[in-house]
Image 1: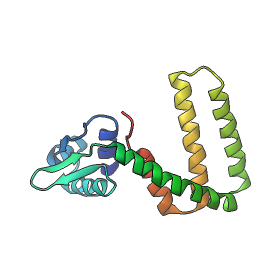
Image 2 (image 1 turned 90 degrees about the vertical axis):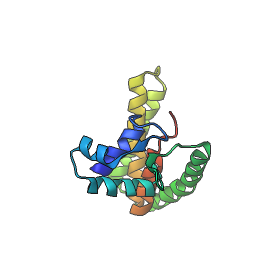
Image 3 (image 1 turned 45 degrees about the vertical axis):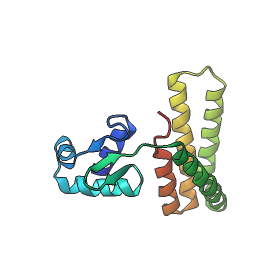
Length: 155
């Protein structure tokens, strides 16, 4: 809970790149003690969302063009592997759902773009990819891929 709440704040623009996060302030705003906040900040640092500067504290990581390049390079390696595994394991119900989602995304692209149609496409696309990665049955790669997709590369 604490990890997600703190991660969503920078992703949502509540904390800007380079802004320091104070344990006590976060704990107070989340209504928890400093211990879960401290643990959440450790996890977020391991995931690359924040960085610890000795004698200064923890601050929101500023994403760079190099970060974006590395993430897309990793995705190019992971996603085809997961798709290949999924192709060998996926069930009929999931294949049917993928077809429905693909048709829905195609229909959206053939209509005039609106904020709602863009959101609908991203939701359908997210579900489409989630079905494939779940069918691949590799929890660690799935978790890594989700973490990469959550990275706020575009502001």
